[in-house]
Length: 247
Image (cartoon, rainbow, N blue to C red; front, side, top):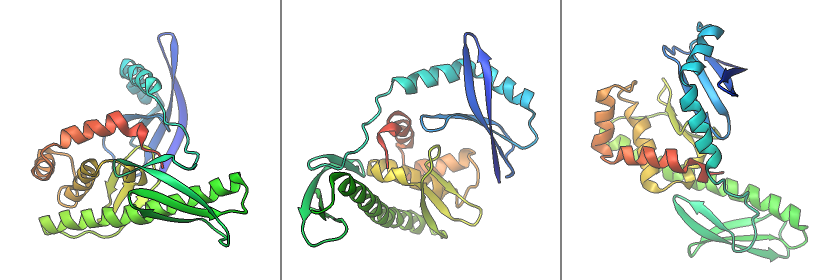
C-alpha cells in the first residue's frame, strides 16, 4: 500500500512543491526522485514525521532546484499526430509511418514492413477518428511486440545465470524503469520499448540480477557489471534521454 500527499517547502525566494509517498513495504531509508511527469517525490517509511520530511527537502533544496531547472530546459517531443510520413521510435530506431486510407475495413490495421509502419485506416472515418484509432492500434502493436522482445531478452539472461523468473509485465509508470517483486515477477516500464537495445538490456540485467541479490550492495553491482560492463553509460543515457521515450 502506498499513501501519497502533497507538500511544499520554502527555499530562498522559491517554493518547492513536492509529493510525499509513504509505503507500507519495508522501506528503511528516505529518497527524493524528480521526473517531468510527477515532479518532486519524497519517498519515506510510514513513521517519518512531516517535520523530518521538510528537513529532508530543505537539505536537498539546492539539488532539487538545479534538477528542476535542468528538466525545464530539456526539449520536450511534440505529441504524435499519426500522419503519413511521421517517424516513430522503436528500440532506439526511428521508422516512418505510412497511412493508407482503405475502403472496406472497420478498424485500423497496422503492420511493420520493410522498415516502416504501414497502417491501413478506414477511409470513411473523419481525420480525428482515424488518428484516435491509429494511436490505439500502434499502442497495441508496441505492447505486443515489445513484450515479446523483452521476454526473449529476460529468458536469455536468466538462462545465462541458470535462474528462473515468474511473470513479466509491462506497466505504464513514470519514475521507475523496472522492478523485481518478492515473488520473482519482473515489471518493466513500457516506455523502454522506445530505448536502444543495449539500454533495454541493462534494465533487464538489473532486474534479473535482483532475482539473485535483493539489494544494491557491491555484490549486486559486480554481477550487473559482469553482464554489462558499460552499465554506467546506459544509466547515464536513461537519465539524459528519458524525455524522448513517450508511449
